[in-house]
Image (cartoon, rainbow, N blue to C red; front, top):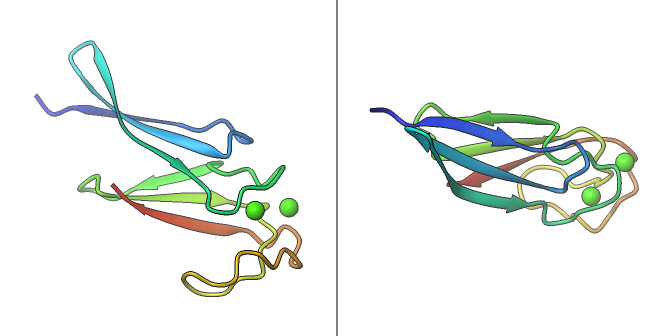
Length: 90
Ligand SMILES: [Ca+2]
Ligand SMILES: [Ca+2]
C-alpha cells in the first residue's frame, strides 16, 4: 500500500513537518525550519512536494531578505515582504 502524505504548516509556525501515513499510523518524515526566521514571514504558507517525495518547496511570501539566487545574503532584510522559496531535500 502506498503511504499517504500530509503536510502541516500553520502560517506563522516558522517550521513545517512532513508526515506519511500507512494504514492508520502517521509517521514524521522531516521537520524543517527557515534558516533566517522572522516574525510574520509566514514560512510554510504554500508547500509543494516533488512527485518522488524527496524535494520540498516551502513558500514564504512575507520574507524580507534581499538575497538573490541560491544561498544569497539572508541577513540583509531591507526588501520588505519580497518573499522567498526554501528548498529542502528530504
Ligand atoms: Ca526572515
Ligand atoms: Ca515581512
